Length: 264
Image 1 (cartoon, rainbow, N blue to C red):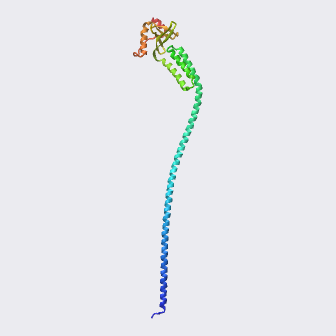
Image 2 (cartoon, rainbow, N blue to C red):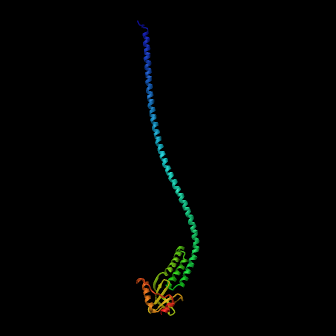
Image 3 (spheres, helix red, strand yellow):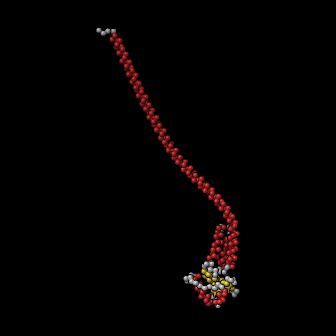
């Protein structure tokens, strides 16, 4: 038969165990809830940290892209600066060349004006010794050249061009044929005449009205008379050729006075 005295103690032990188990379970439940809450909080912290890390990463990438863009701009500016330096160096060289040219031009101007004056003197002497065709026109051209040299509003280049142009005109006379009307002054008076110039090898006149014929004797430096035959016909033909009224053709002109005398 069991000992009835031990039953209350057993019940007390069982109650203590149950109470202790409940306490342990309650404490374990509380600990689990605390751990779960702490895990959730840590997960939220990790999510926040991850968001912050992603934000920092995005900002870093944006800053890196901006840095690379700025680097490209800097590289472009460096290239541009290098090109500007090259242009400045070229401009400095050109400036030095221009300054030297300006100095040279000043020297040339001091030398060329006396040269142009001597050229005009030579042209005037040449005209005086040449056949007396277009005398007024050629004298006026020389006078115009002299007046041009003294003008301050005309550049040296223009003065030189005009003088060279006058020389070119005189040169062209030697290879052209020309008919013109002008005044002729002889010992027996002045009269109008038609002139026929063939280069610089022949200058013939025919007076207006009485139609006297003559030519410039270059050897003697005087006007000589020409016989009417055959030179009147040749003179007429030459005038028509010079005026472009007929096609060019060969014509005979007196050059040597002896030939004129032999033809009479």
